[in-house]
Every structure is written in C-alpha cells, then in structure tokens.
Length: 265
Ligand SMILES: Nc1ncnc2c1ncn2[C@@H]1O[C@H](COP(=O)(O)OP(=O)(O)OP(=O)(O)O)[C@@H](O)[C@H]1O
Image (cartoon, rainbow, N blue to C red; front, side):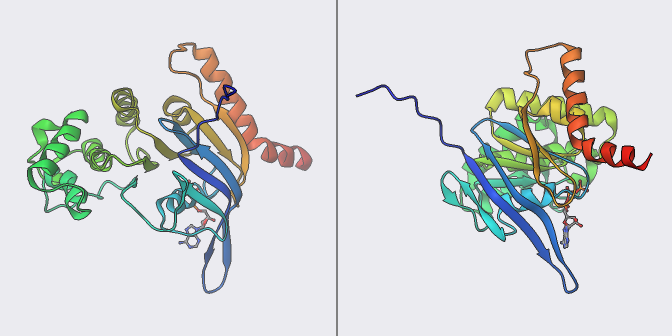
C-alpha cells in the first residue's frame, strides 16, 4: 500500500455561509458566503470592523441561527441547534446566575445537560475553577467578584463541559486595559495547559495577534472573507514581527477605505 499523507479533517468546517436577519421592514445580510476551517487546538480568531458579522457567525456556529446558504459542520455533522459540544462565553459580565456560588455556576451546565451528577460534577467544576485560579472563591457569590474574576468563572464554566470548541464573543471587550492583558495571558496559559480549541471574536488587531494562532479577516458589512493568516508564533519574541503583521492586517482591513479616501481628494 502506498504511504498516503492524509490531510487531517477539520474539527469545524464553515462552508459558503450566508447569514441573514429577517426583520419586519428589512432583510439584513450579515455575512456573505464565508468559508473557513478550524482544526483541533486552533486558537482561531474572527477579526473585522464593527458590523461585519463576527458575532452572527459565532451565533451560527453555536447553532442559534441557521445559514440561509451554505453549511456548518462540526466533526462532520451539520450544526443546526445549540449543543454541549459548543460552549459560548459572552462579553457581558452578568452571564452568571447571581443566586448560585462560583462552584454552583460552573456545575450548572454539567448537571443541566446530564453530563455529570453529584460529586463527579463538583470535582469537574473544581478542576476548572482551579485552572482559572479561583479555588479560594469557589463558595463566593458572583456579586462579590470583580469583572475579570466573573469572566474567569464564565470561562471555567464553558471549559468544564470540555466542549469540542469554546466560542468566545469579545470576552474582554468590557475590561480595562490592564485586566484585559491579564485575561489574555491567562487564556494563553490555559491553552498551554489544555490545548483546547477556541473560536474567538474580536475587533482588536493586537488581541487577535496575541491570542490567535489563525486569523480570519472579514470585510465590512456584509462580512466576506478578505484573507486568512497565521499569527506570529508564540515562540517568536520579535516585536518587529508583531508590528509588521499588525500593519499588514490594518492595510488589508482598511484598504477599501483608503482607496475611497484617495478618490475623494
Ligand atoms: N437581531 C438582529 N436583527 C437584525 N439585524 C441584526 C441583528 N443582529 C445583528 N444584526 C445586523 O447584522 C450585522 C452584523 O452584526 P454583528 O453583530 O454580527 O456584527 P459584529 O461584527 O459582531 O459587530 P460588533 O463588532 O460591533 O459586535 C449588522 O449589520 C447588524 O446590524
């Protein structure tokens, strides 16, 4: 038998996906024929200007919105509804249940989905609460935590389900710059520990380069794929390489606007 080198199958395959919202007065096309593939352990970033459909794409991968055109497959199976194999972390701080402690919040989806029960759910929850450095706060209620800590609980809750892919919608958008940087470092540390697969939405170019391994650039509304790039590998500590990629991405994202501006002059 010839020794065939097979390409690994993508974990997530988004193919020619057009997403639309039907309102009473309008039909809004959020993305137009977007395709990309996410492989196991990718830190895959959707990057683009406000309104280009990043959150809508994430919602569709989450199964909350079905494509008008195209198809989304996870491990080869078409996505058509939400499922515990895709856990979503939102940007809002108040995504935790205020009447439950940190531990109870993290246990909640494990119990509600029937994935684990009793002591096993508690142990799994504690394992991830420790990973996000909140063991001391396991019995605290959300209102006693800072915004960054609440966000870590939300991440622990998503990760405890051990989904095939963790979906994060601008998870740090509402944090101050210092906490944001700390949270980005923590995300990367968690990734070093567990190599989870994450699909991450941001409109920050530096955040995409820092946190992502692959970056999909989307055009302004309606979002179409402009390019797909590798980020700067994390073992390359050359600030010039980062600056050069930032510049390249900026040029690609805003090239049309520059052309328009030039025409106006
Ligand atoms: N529920 C909705 N009903 C109608 N139109 C919507 C709805 N949600 C989003 N849109 C529209 O779809 C387009 C894409 O929105 P989306 O929120 O996905 O963009 P985004 O890239 O995530 O933006 P941002 O970076 O500002 O969060 C926008 O034109 C938006 O106005």
